[in-house]
Image 1 (cartoon, rainbow, N blue to C red):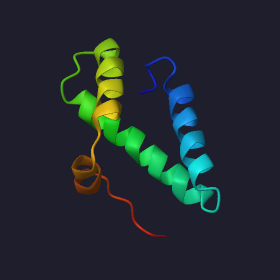
Image 2: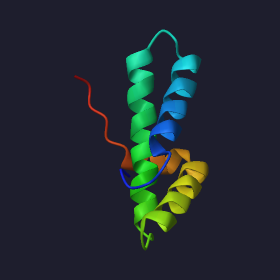
Image 3: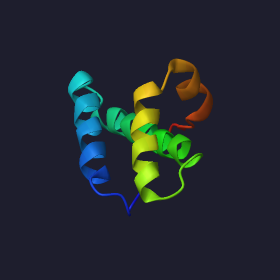
Image 4: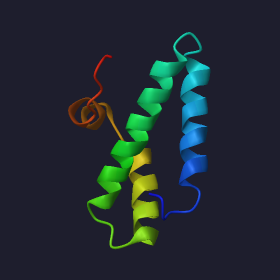
Length: 79
């Protein structure tokens, strides 16, 4: 994702949205936002042919994530 312009801004916005909805648990909210963004990147990469298609595919994947995809593919462990 380091070759795709604006992914840092996008993930920061996602983190802010998650933290704003769970102000009592900002660390957990940020971790979950990062996990979702990473999952969208993994899904987008499955069919990407390069950085441009990865960007579009990642945004499409982020938009279409559902509970099944999230619970079956995200791995977060308690520290």
